[in-house]
Amino acid sequence: MSTLYLVSTPIGNLKDITLRALDVLGEVDLILAEDTRKTQKLLSAHHITKPIESLHEHNEEARIPSVLNKLRSGKQIALVSDAGTPTLSDPGFKLVRAALNKNIKVVPIPGTSSLLAALVPSGLPTDRILFVGYLPKKPGKKCASLDFIEFVINKNPTTVVFFESPYRINKTLQTLAERFPEKELVIARELTKIHEEFYRGKVKDLAASVIKQKGEFTLLLR
Image (cartoon, rainbow, N blue to C red; front, side):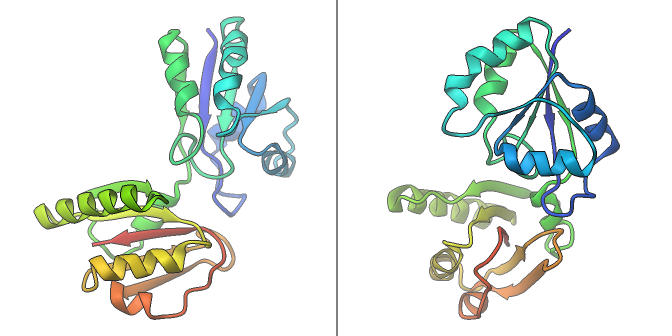
């Protein structure tokens, strides 16, 4: 039976990959990658040679028919994103839905996730969390998202987790400071990499501090 594997890959340190993930990547007929160049570096580091094709947010819909044809013909295919878990604020959701609609087996190969890597050492409660991905760029949608977050954390104490890019981190911190100045905030930067660091404090204080605008960020609000 053909299978679509969703393979989690390292978010920084190349050693953060499971033995099962390496087995799957070494056995499938084709690897679909968000960025073929980044994935090739990972494969080369583990001496894996396999055909690679791109599947990213700009070509996912167009690629789905050909991928489904390969799966229906019996091919085993692995989907990876640039880092972390496919479909989690990364491409792949549309392909997964299409595969399931065709009764094609979809198997997760779990591994590193920046969400969990930031949450576990954050020092914030982990019993109830809300993951919201990236905040919308458009003001109206962003305001609606912040309204929802405010409603949730005021209704029940919840740790809210979201991602942010280095280009928007300072603006996002200012926005959070206007809404939640006294809330606790943890900022995780460059997770699992050599310059990994955590900032902890009240939102208003972190918004007024100097945060390096480099690398990917995971923010946790409580």
